[in-house]
Image (cartoon, rainbow, N blue to C red; front, side, top):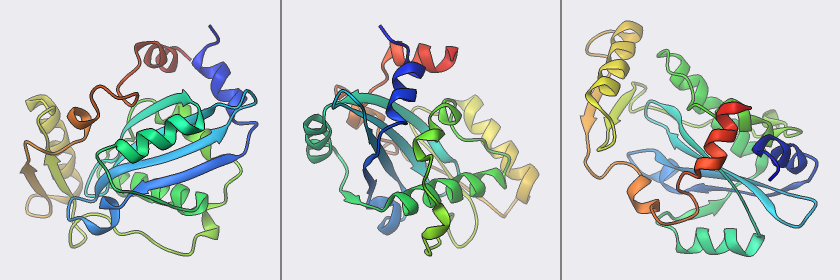
Length: 202
């Protein structure tokens, strides 16, 4: 089987198929949701990169690549737990870049694997998008810890926030329902061990 890197490189020769984003990133107080970018591959399939964006603090929280046919992607989006809307490639790239820049202010890096798939935006000029996106709450970071965040992880993030902006200039909240991992269980968006191993190895 061709490695993830090989399949991904093949996808980069194809055009952007579609860019989509969760409405929750714009009209929900959590500013939390998926951003999807797909490119057409020579064999008719799509290479799809789904980034889970935390617009309150973490930036790119997780990355899930997959390969599928266009009809399969449509079905996943239509039957998924989020309200997904179309977005221009330029706006999608700018949203991701600004989310990363916001998190970087607090010493928070994008999710492992992001650098391996960032090239999905190659050839797209984010400066063509004239909109700017808002992050945080009233300008301050808000770390919402979910059910999958360990005490160690929570401590690491709060330490970074304390060091970067100081006590009283950020908020930590806990929400047992926060996150999409459970809702996505059983779909093709869940982690693929082979893809994960390829991303780590490449």
